[in-house]
Image (cartoon, rainbow, N blue to C red; front, side, top):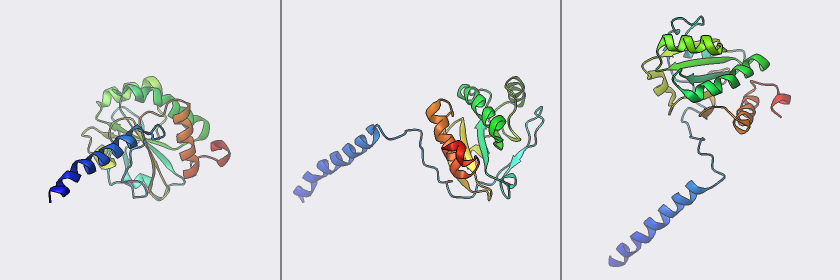
Length: 188
């Protein structure tokens, strides 16, 4: 029995060493946080529109039987990285006709309306998630986060953080192409 207790520290050291090696792996992308929603139906939610913004609200029913995949972007006016990402998403909508829906997360409606008025509104629908309940249902860890949802309402992809910079845009473009939201030639 004493020998068994003598081995326990060695086993603990090996487990911890393996964990640290995994964490220090330079090829591991820390922004890739697994989501239980991938390949699952989008969660049930039904959000009203943002007062002062001239687009309808957003709910689960808007994500099914769509002509193609849609992108759900969780954003807020108080989120600094959201502002940088906003220009990228706007460009995707203007250039490639991307169908972009938004969840305005824990934001004051007047702040969101002003923010969208100043930066432009690329969203076809925006749901106001003032309580953050829909964000919990989507399993977000913060804003911004972006999801690609298939025509049948299945969550296909999740991007954590702002889609800013060549690497992030390339990764997101590849995901859009694989989901069928962009032409094959564009993503290659």
